[in-house]
Image 1 (cartoon, rainbow, N blue to C red):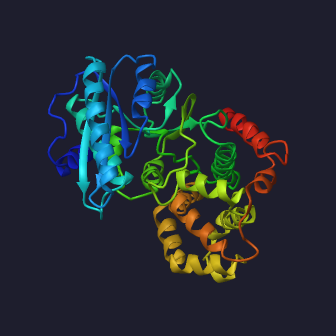
Image 2 (tube, rainbow, N blue to C red; image 1 turned 90 degrees about the vertical axis):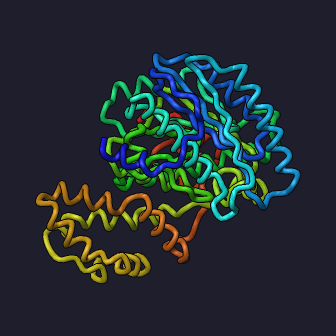
Image 3 (cartoon, rainbow, N blue to C red; image 1 turned 30 degrees about the horizontal axis):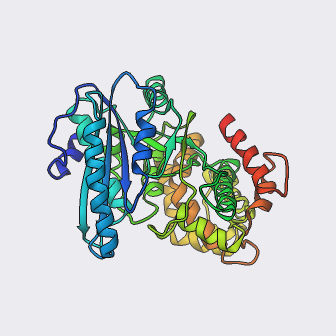
Length: 410
């Protein structure tokens, strides 16, 4: 309760004047910039089975002061259309609010800032409804979802009262006539990469291995405050934010519903799905982290019993030179001493070490190791086959279909 009050005191004035319903339990947040199909995404939510509590959908139409006149005109028109749409479609138990933030400072404008504005307001409104256990979800203006999306979220958090948040099952559309064959082939490879990246971490024993996709996650309001809210980064904001939530513990995978993100090319952010799909569609292939890099990290984890029992000197560990250099820069010897001092059993020490060496650290090490020939990036199909989790295949589509089933079963 202290964290929620503290975070609430940091917020600016409310963005929405109307008081929330006393039954408010779920707030869906949707950033939108140059989006032509936002209504379809809201319609998907309107078509959902309705949960016991009230629902709000907050949409943030925003753009930087530096965008073209054409983009400004498009987004202004979108706001007017969506505002009228919201008035028509809103009900007492399902309210839609369209927020408009034009000409934002280019230093802060971006999807991270848009998500933060939305999620801060969602947090405020749930607290206004006296519901710090209320649910804030991340969604996108080009996404859809299964009909049970809202009910599944409500059921999940009711069944796991200690849950801080969850990563929601997602599947990109990988066929149809909306995009070219090259785009569908690209999204198959990109999603395969996302699933490989998480499964490789799970195989080496990483407890923080969860998908961090902006359109498919949910957190409780009080835990949103506990990590000081959404990160206002221009890209990768979902990863950085969710790593903090995951570190709180009691974070889960929700597989009883599904979100369907768009497969399109986009240049709205510097990296992520849109830019990756564009790059893959041009190159015809997707390189990913070498599985040997994950195995190298596992060598460190395997040393933990020895590290706990005696002094640890990274230069004597037998790890790759670049990895050793990184650990020294992170002052690992001092970190280990502090962890031993504060954790009087090996189990507690290991848990604390794995929390310290979480998703941020793993990503940094992978990016360092990939600079060498031995750990260089390799084709994603070959690396998925290296995992040994599913039947091997040279077909990216076959591998994706298999690994989707595998991921949904664990």
